[in-house]
Length: 447
Image (cartoon, rainbow, N blue to C red; front, side, top):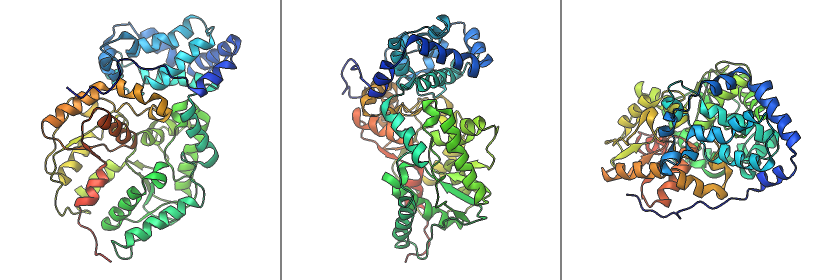
């Protein structure tokens, strides 16, 4: 068993964003917003999902919160819908501010919108969508949790989630270029190069806290001989927390800027770093809200990009990673895009020994950080730790078979698994694929 370093009960969280928002509400205002969303925006889709559910409970086994809380039905997917959306429908929107506070907490911090439960539903009901509808109502009522709302505000003001200033972005790229030229002679991070094959885009935390990932990407692009560029202007951040706050209008504005930047640069495709939610925002939700069934410019996740580089022999491996590894399958690029076998091909090419965790591939447990839950901030860290005990047990079992390195090709997964790793005392080494690829590849001539 994993080390049980958590208290038996979760503490009540007083979230300033939820509390202040609720203090301004009236039941009339709540009913007006709920009915506008349910019947003006959701329409038939919500009606079909609600009417189709037969309350069989099969979705429960798909939820890591339910499994981690000893199968408490309050944490089952259907139970969460019953405590929120169904009650709103049953009462025709006439619910209290206290009810909405609880609904906001459930939708934002007890569901990762990972869609694992939908695979267990005999009708394929998209329960993640229903929870996002609740978040949409919460947003329009002005009671989104404080930390994630702050991130969405950053997107709105700066078009990136970390308040990276206009001159700070190219300065960071120049800094990483200078650093990389110490290792590879003549290396460039091309900016504003029109007609390049690839526009490489990242999420806000990379220039702010993880600039080494940009460094590694530059080395990989250089070694592979890619014709690539990065934008010097806004539009470089492919993340989108507004997608998870229910601020659909802002989500669309962020995604439009991203696509328009690629169109302005006349690139053939966008390659993005190892981020799952950002991929969902450009491949599934943001593009479709803008009216594009598929992205207007092809989008390639890093896993697929590395797969192509290795398959085509553009990257040579000097010596494989020797520590036994295990692979976490991120929800948004595995259940959302089916990249699990390509990820295994990449890992097999750069690592000597892959030890599978179970369940895996599309049945893998969520990291409990995705869906904007980790972005609700430190007040809810224990909610995540208690809500994903099954993940800790899954990792402990894999470690007992010899795995030492945990590969997580997604930013939210990486951060969430680091938290679980430390909290439960697993002592595994969490890596991105690029960390290992950079370490084992043949590099161009040194300066």
